[in-house]
Length: 440
View 1: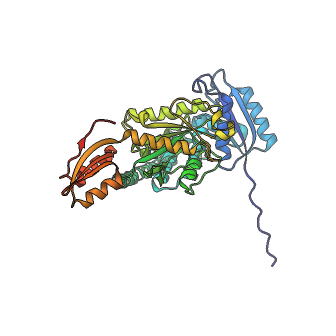
View 2: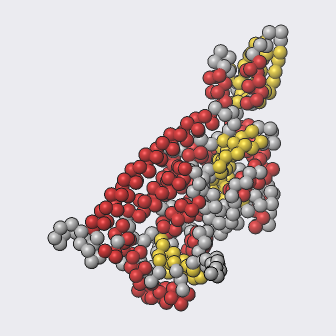
View 3: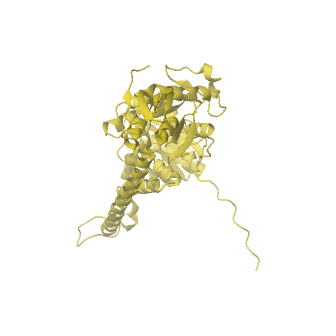
């Protein structure tokens, strides 16, 4: 019997991306065109082939379909003419609105929340990331159970005429989801405790932590790879990296730090994902320096900057981040190559312009990190016995020995230490007092 030829590669799903643009839908200064471009990037990042995009101004939001009657008719014609399989609506749709739009256009409809959930689900790699995304998915699905069982509309749940369509099945599914949600929350709590132990162990490592934060697709992972030589996935797409990654980095002065890459920020993050998102930012709370990486060439760069700062402020309000985080933040203006080089990038005082792609400006960034480290170190005097070899080696390895005077029995040192290293030294060598000195 002749074998059938293997199937060719599956064709990509054709998609339309539409933005309902009401007056109150955007942060001040954020252009509708930039928001639409971001939505197109989100849709393309999960393999959809975009064949139509549109911005639909809304005088008022229609409760049934969000879009106006004429707008929906126009979109339906395009969907049928272009054989569109998925319509991405860059807004949050109610279950009824989503159901009505699907019925009217005859294709699948995904709102902004569903789209971002799909991306997070496809990219999460760590145990906690997977659990957080599944938890968010289930919470999102639970609110939409009624639309999953419209095929039972001829059935009645309960006794007599009580209950709505398929109510028995809906309640059964809701119980199953609730049981899974409870289990997920318990598993997440265990994962958090385990990671807390790992973080506590890292505090014993004598290296400061430098965390990269920034809007999605700002080039954090490319910068991370460039300066550490790591092979972290970096691609010109939104949310290319979701899980935190850490590598050792040696600065020009010879100091060693731990560099941490984190998930990219985004505006209007779905409420179901806020907990999952912030959990990936716990490394930021432990960081000695925060590098805020910005896409300096993006037309909406200022609004993206405000989105990032807003999340960090919210974390401060929730006691996830200390109030002094802004004092240890260095703004990194990336993608200078798209603007003609670092000299062409407008910057504020204290910021550094770089191109992670070409490497231009990276020496300046390394020097800025080194200088910040120096400013944050404190000056101490300590006297050691000539037999205290372990303490002497510790100070040379973890601090900066600025001056040393030796006599027959004692070694007198002037050293600079980070506050965390000061605490480590005092715990490890409690019999050797550190005497604070006046700042240089």
